[in-house]
Amino acid sequence: MKVLWRYGSLRLCSAAWTQCLGRPVALLRRLSMQRYSIEERGRPNTTEYRLYFKNGDGKFISPFHDIPLHAGTEENNDVPAKKSKSNWDKTVFNMVVEVPRWTNAKMEIATKESLNPIKQDIKKGKLRYVSNVFPYKGYIWNYGALPQTWEDPSHKDKDTNCRGDNDPIDVCEIGSKVCSRGDVIQVKVLGALGLIDEGEMDWKIIAINIDDPEADKFNGIEDVRKHKPGYLEATVDWLKSYKVPDGKPENQFGFNGEFKNQEFAMDVIKVTHDFWQDMVHKRSECGEIQCKNVLIGESPFCCNEKEATAIVHSAASPGESVPVSSEVDIWHFLRK
Image (cartoon, rainbow, N blue to C red; front, side, top):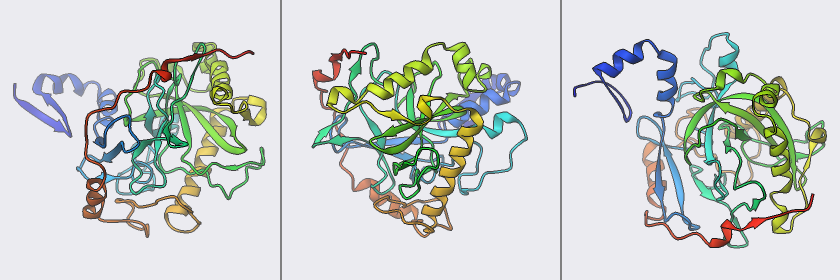
């Protein structure tokens, strides 16, 4: 079958292209998944395992710094591209999926490593897995981060009096599809929850994948209550309890655990994006955060493609995965 059109790894024959002409939005949504790819280094389920990111041009990039926050932004610019005035556009952002729903490995963007690959968190020399706290199996959403955001630890939140947790802002994606580790998806922001994690402000953005078949039904936090009853309550319960099996106290919340609306969430994202801008342009202290990037030309941390490739090739060679301990499958029952 003759290929008429190609975008990255996506190839369309003439018949498929004709069908897509009438569905440009759906096509663009699928294309968003093709803009980035991942390269594994090290053996899965080991401390050396890393996921590095490439853009559509095959360049190794940082998912923290080089993937734009705003969906539709030009890759070579950290300033949002001109967008339409629709509410849809304003509330849609790129999300880097770190942890697929129902899985336990606590994967995260390695903010203190060059090019910020995804790696598994380590506690006391051991790989970290979240416990299964009945009735929840692993994470109950696709969990990840908004690129080009940073919760500045020098900033004290005016409402909670807590400082930022020094990470990109977190996202709980509530759509029906189970994503894959390293996916870059576009999500519509619905609201926010102010988790206080060991005294640090740790915002959780509630969002839905725009490719979800029911995405049009969700335009604010109340739509989650309406169409997915119990999900927000489960989100609070999970975040409050997930560290208890490890001997930690329950997490606390700002605003008494109240979910804030879409407008509030958008303000939080804007503020954390501004903090990131200051950091990556060296207008604020970044501490141990690694700001090396490939595409932000005005950043003093910008490096060339050759240097980025050398960083990835210096990581451990890929290999077969190591079996996961059976302890990960244990269920924990907590008294309420």
